[in-house]
Image 1: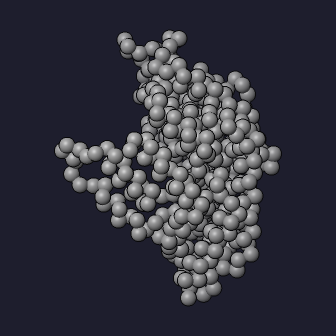
Image 2 (image 1 turned 180 degrees about the vertical axis):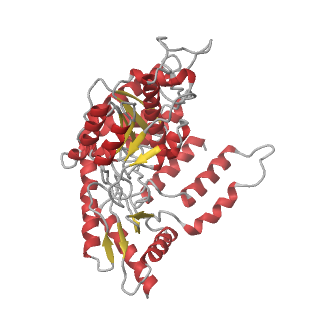
Length: 463
């Protein structure tokens, strides 16, 4: 059988099973042992290899593209995006430059323009497609670093950070680990963020942040605003932070990994008021856009800064800055680049702004439905408001003295059970669950099933 036909034949049954299968089948995990052993000396029949990979993967893989996966913030994959991702693998384009693939370059150009339109950003914005929200933060903060160095009279792309002072980075308690990792990789250190929070949840203390900025006596600084905090989906007041950035001449970066999609609905657009005043924005397509993994993007108000920060020094066989054959490999951290724009272009083309707005609003409704189910359950307690798509709650069964320990064990039992998937976190000092609803396949029935499983596991643990 043709190898691609094998994959095609397996795809239909697997996709059809997503609505009812366990997210993780514990019994199938033993199949992973079949992947090991010594490196084959002569290899095997490719058809047998693909059959084994499909048999193991469709049984033991995590059904994270299914409607009952609520862990992390992981969307599914729309049919158009999946087909386009297969097309990207088929064509295997190197999206480094126009000369390496005019096709990939044009798709990426259109996809970036459409993303800016989707979020209501001015047509003068540009960006770079990258592999993740962490790389989107890395790209955005890399541009911010170049800007900051220039304010000190140094081209950091040419000469690095040596001799410069530490770059001031300010944020609320909502700052995400991926932004810290980006600062770590850029050489600033992940501890460089000064957190200005007014409570244990992490809400920003604007007065303290203003005092910090004033104490810098005009030295340039970077502010990280957070659009969609990961525990409960809360937002920093972006417009207020934009005011501070304007007042003190700071760079404003918005980490909008999934929260940026609040811009799509009139019901939540107010949460991202002021994003057009930012200097850079990071977001993730494989979250709420529902395209396959490795689909992050950095959007930049002054896109020419990308080339200044990430342009390569050149090689005799490569197009360099200013060459008409150059392209996106000079505008971001990666040179050899997969044509990851294809799924983004396809899903935006197939479903349009209206289709994605409808999806976001459907998830808003489901999150409120989940919140209502939790509020009605005597042994469950919601810990936070639900501004977007995450519902933060914990179990509070009578007679349990250590609720943190109980909820840790409940989270572990939920993962082990495998019928639905959600992980634990710590919110305002309390261990909690934080299901995120961003999958286009998820229905109210899936939400009800999730609550039923939780209540069943709580009952088992206390009986």
